Length: 196
Picture (cartoon, rainbow, N blue to C red):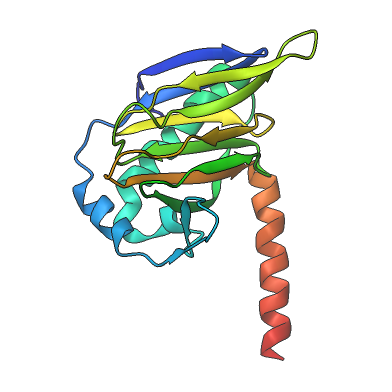
């Protein structure tokens, strides 16, 4: 059952970006994320957890439930379509001097849940192109406990963190249940083959 969730929307290139607010304490979940192992990059990119199913850990159950309810709200009220399920999820750790390069996800709807936001210099930035092909930035301010959902077609990035405080965010992808069901079948097949 979907709870009544507070949602704020913005529009970019005929696409809805929605923000939701988590109103519970998340210090235990943040501590869990800080203890994860991270992939370090030498080129100044933000670090990413090796764990690609972080929202499926028992320590993340309340945040996972909030995100799943928000996905249901977005799917029903913005997309007017079928439900979506969480797929991959990871933690991004952005220390001072690090940034997130422009990228897109292979997903249906992407999302970012923000644990720590050092200051207003690290918004989530979307590239937007107008009718004559001019591209500029559409900056979305982010807040602690905030969740942003957006379609995979939007290229996005985060500027350099100039603050000494580390920024922690969960990134995730979602898929239609039929796609996840197919993944499970494929996984079961290969698990069975390994057992032979």
